[in-house]
Length: 114
Image 1 (cartoon, one colour):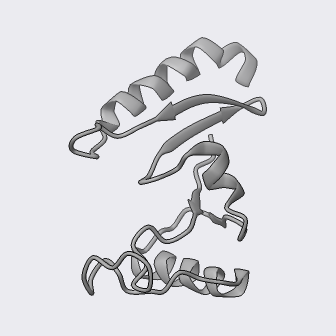
Image 2: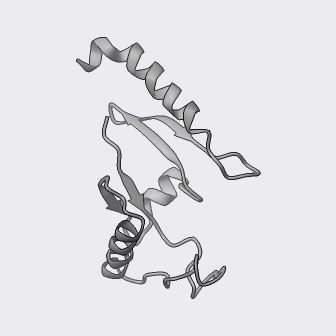
């Protein structure tokens, strides 16, 4: 399995929906170049080691997959196999549930993944 991050539009851009200096630290980009700069800074500041893709300025990924506030997806054989969503009240994930789904998926597809 490959893991990656997709950087999408800013949820709390300081020029649109500011929520304080810590969270709202960048403006909403108006060009792909600005979004790329924000994505690189995010990757550096949060020390993401996995690959990061950047949504286009039409927000195609975000609009297709509904990725707010954040989501985990499994795409298998070109099809969406899992869309894990956070708890509706706490916005938290139980990552052990995602781990279990991945383990079950792998076990059920071991003969086709080899």
